[in-house]
Length: 66
Image 1 (cartoon, rainbow, N blue to C red):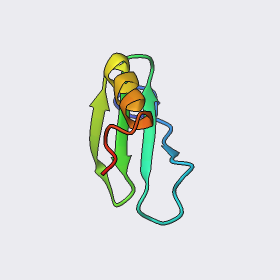
Image 2 (spheres, helix red, strand yellow):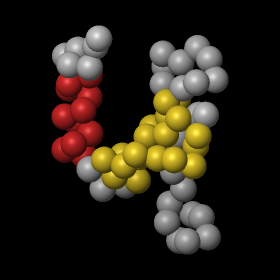
Image 3 (cartoon, one colour):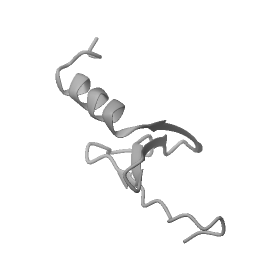
């Protein structure tokens, strides 16, 4: 646990990362999924599990492809 009493987040780097510009994901229990860039680890996006699953589904379906 960290000093605030909450469990430490374990960050996982994307398996597709082959440089220093990567995304990392961490879960905080079952309530939150956090995403950050290795270039700016202090800035994080946080998702509830339903929104996270919707984002992953949309990415897999190519909704954000150019």
